[in-house]
Amino acid sequence: MMSEIASVVHLSFSLRQELEYGRSMKKHLMNRNFFSWSVTVVPVENGEYFDLYLNAKCTMSDAPDYLKNQVEGEFLFKNTSLDLCVSGKFEGESTRLCCKTARKSLEDQNLSLKLTFGTTMGRAVPFIREQPITLSVGGRKFEVLESTIMQKFSRLRLDLLLSKETLENKNEGTPRLFYDRDPKHFQLILNFIRDGSENLPKTWEELGEFLEEAKYYELKELIKLCEEALERKSHEVPFGLVSLNVGGTVFQTTKATLTRFDGMFKTMLDNGISVKINEIDTLFIDRSPKHFDLILNFMRDGDVEFPETSREIREIRREAQYYLLGGLVEACEQFLVAGEKLDF
Image (cartoon, rainbow, N blue to C red; front, top):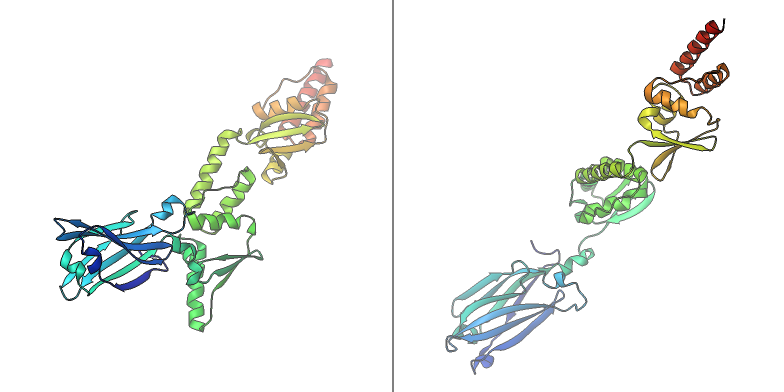
């Protein structure tokens, strides 16, 4: 496929004088699209035939090496008086094409060249032909080319096609699209559509946000990348780890433990009442940490070893009532009743 700014060039020229001595020569043709074009002829078979080379050399010395070889196009050498027609096509990373031609064909005055070509370099300035489309995301403006949006299936592409159809029916101009979304991650969304960039947010929270944006814009490949990144992160940090700061003493357990029974912790975690510190859910509880080990053991196992004194059991019952752990409250009361009967 030719570049957006492909060129078609017709050149007529004669090589008669240059071929008089039957030796190699090079004839400059033109500079176009960041490349210098020339023809080289090399005698073969006692000078009766010549290898004719069409050369393209990048004129941008600071261009990356892989771009210096990115030429695409077709050529046609023609001599109307001798019924000569030689054609070829640039393939891969070739910047030089060769064809074998009789001497008399090259010496004739009617030799012409038709060259249709484009370059990857040319695609760096597509604004020559294409006007950007304005996207407003949560009030923030982004500009992007239609050809970029069309590269991948997404909500953007569907909305653009629908908008263009509507505007064409009304004889109006360039589409403008508005999305009532947070623009925080939209630049990364565009980068992915443009060149498949896999530059994802680093934290759990932002990865989760980015995944939701990928789902909204219906980018199937990006959704998969986000899900895979989240899966990898689940192995980096203990999954569902929760840090509890109880009266200044820190305890760590899992979300599964804290949500095993109905109660204050289950309500808080299910409703997102926590903060993230180093990827770990962190809760601060303004209570005494004295019996909190026993509280955690009850949530882990559903059973605990009570201390021997009624005073401590009443303290534990008070904490269980605060944490809304009905099963532990009931166990404390049963233990207290049993203790009173023994005392009697």
